[in-house]
Length: 144
Length: 429
Image 1 (cartoon, rainbow over the protein chains, first blue to last red):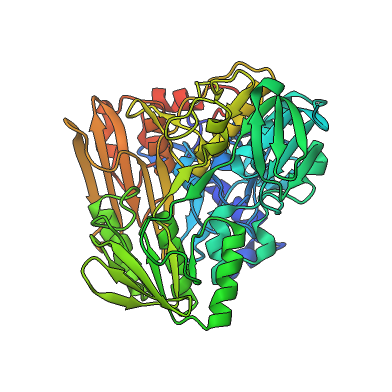
Image 2 (cartoon, each protein chain N blue to C red):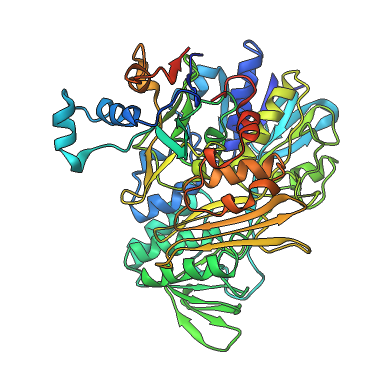
């Protein structure tokens, strides 16, 4: 399956990937509108990690043997049999955080206010190119 | 002569059984499959029954997989059918209805049975165990019918804590009785447990530790109180016994299959009979940290064992790496995670972090350069990175000071490790 890959050599830590991930999942038509409605902003499913000069953007790796699918007690984390993508059903999530316990990448975000998983990359649900990749100014994210 | 014969017969319809069905169908598109369960339900998420009791999750949302699961995978279902006998010599399973099903390969994924301690009064109406959907239905009905105001939960482990949480949420005055010195004693260390206890007490739950229940008293056949070994008596119109679950080994034992505390399996999840496999809470699992085999009743382990068993039943040659004990529990809104050992083994170094506000806590044990246990309370984000390091036995000597930091990320780890966990098909960063 196609996955998103990060290149830490060229990531400049601009965090545009986070911005466009939020926008993509906000349901708004324009960036300005999305960010003027702070209350309803979704958490970004991609996070830029930074340590001094090094940075890279990390989101769910959509593992073949995904430990989060094995661990989910609510049937909320499933693998799409067609695309292989790991999907998270927010309506089914009860916030047991078993997925957080087993994700070796630390790629699943917790939303303490909602008491559930806040966000997880959905590869932009069938978009030709995921938003984070499309808007990376330095080609530090590729989709292949 | 069996009435029907299946290439793959799965006993049990929870996570291990479903994982096996899915894994078998991935490798064998045509083999015939059936699943037998003594429960009438479509596969459901048993840990969610306390959420349904509390009314936090609607009943229709506890399906583990979509309703078309069995149809999509081409699986015959025998629900509400208890197993009467397994006959390995004839390759058949006899159901309590008298029907018999033949098999090529058989999987035992029949879980565990709740332990009811031998104290007087457990037969009274209003005394329940709480592991199955039908238990939840009975408890819910009883609470309504009897207008229950006070409850006692005997046992402060994972099930006891979640049941107490649901009772408190329903406005029932709830007391948890725990024999050990702390709640969640198998999942959390002293500090983590006391933080969980505080969260529960803030939710209105009374907790009595280092105390046993000696008898349950009633009148007119209905429960009215629980007497403790301290001599005091707690009034209760409902009592839930949650002292533990033991592997449901009886059918295997009766069939001459090797059994210890759980059904014995090799690293391929195969029992002493070459055509019979076992997975999940019924089986003993290898713990790579302690190097022993014992029942380790955890959901992720059950799924992974079911998956490995299923693949091997379908002809693969795959080993199961073992189950590291781990638990992720929200105690009345406080997230907690523990992985591996929860108390320091001999010769281990302990790393500890506490946030200034006292709401977050992390502790880790390192032995011979490797993390062998970790506890997270409050801020649990990225705990899985530590789980990955434990599971893979990575030498963390070179970056141990980063492990305990709150902003731990993949970037905190040395590049060669990042490359190491991200290598392999399909998971490269």
